[in-house]
Length: 104
Image (cartoon, rainbow, N blue to C red; front, side):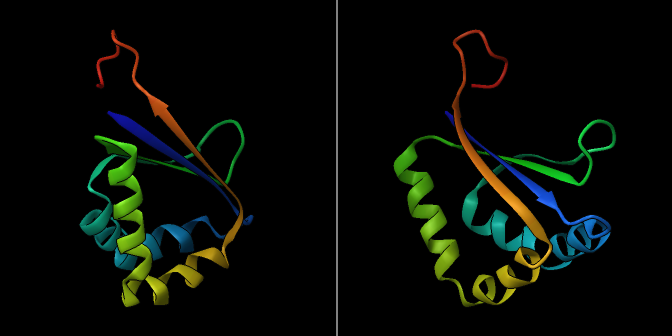
């Protein structure tokens, strides 16, 4: 299993608006296309204004196919600029679970 860990730095003061937009419009679309949501988090201590969400994929080809389908959906095309306006930085990492990890 591959895990995509996406980390966003949100503009100062925009975290509540970001979370509301994702909850009301974005997460249903993402779940429809991206598959298994492992977790969706925001920072409380340490570097503030951070969002981390983790998605699981059985393979990198499937991830690419699913992300392309999401990007082609007119609802996502309309939604994405709303949250992009609230972002300062985006980072995406692909991680592979170690053999002894509880998550495989």
